[in-house]
Image (cartoon, rainbow, N blue to C red; front, side, top):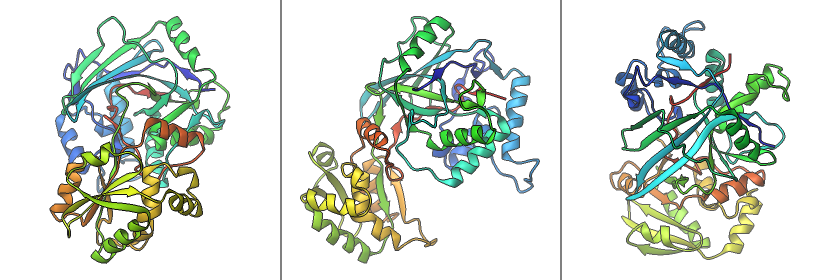
Length: 415
């Protein structure tokens, strides 16, 4: 089934750059323009120049942010800023962090996974053409896996080596990052053999995986062969790792007062609405519950499902019967989708946006930036894997694994 192998990683040299935090950044798809500027100014070799380069008014076919990304990688390799390992290795990665006052530790490893068309790699989210076109241009220009796909598996977790890490540093959020290089081939082969007959699940990076898969197929390489284009770099975490944290993705809306009333009236068909004083009651409640807060009323309500039969009937009628236990699917199917449809093509406002923090979401509504918010509990890892096993796809922005895997720790050049 899943085919996992080591690779020759491309990394920044800690001897030349002891301050690793100035060279790495979060993944491209969570960076705002302000973040991009900040990482650009932090260090001339920061990886943001590769994964999310800036456009220029003079850009053309031969000079654009993708060709410049390839140029940065070439020049950094030539200058010794980056170096490629001599032996195929696995890279063990530990993140230690605090969330809501609780300490966590997540550990996993970087390796290559075969680009699969036999169902060995499972998906849980839909992908979109524009991000894939962007990542394809970068992949073709650089011939490099610049960022990993984040994957989850069932099996044995990695063990931290007894030796000290090759690099260790703190990021801007005081999250600790440590990376070990494992070169012992017999140890690697023994560990990878455990994946034979097992599935792996994409947690984050669906667009990167599908882009790499399409590139390999368009290159007409034998899908069963050992051509390096048949593999892509991934970061793997065992499903029961105590640091495998999924945050909720709350929905923030900019809609009319009439549509807010419509949402409330529709909600009363399926939910019991109870005024509450904090999000804690939602996170601790049993059953299917949501929070609702509007600027007009300045009250927080808990919506507690009271008609599961009606919920299931509606979701089946709308083609989401296999997602009847997924909170984002329930919320969108029963309440949001019909209202949001009315605002399609409305460029005068950002109708739907997202937040991973309940306090920030409520503050955004109170400030007038949004008219109302729906607060959710996070999806569980088991729900995500069950959705993937069923061949279904969750609504957009259903999962947010925290913290993100930093870009620039390890890359993999294949051409």
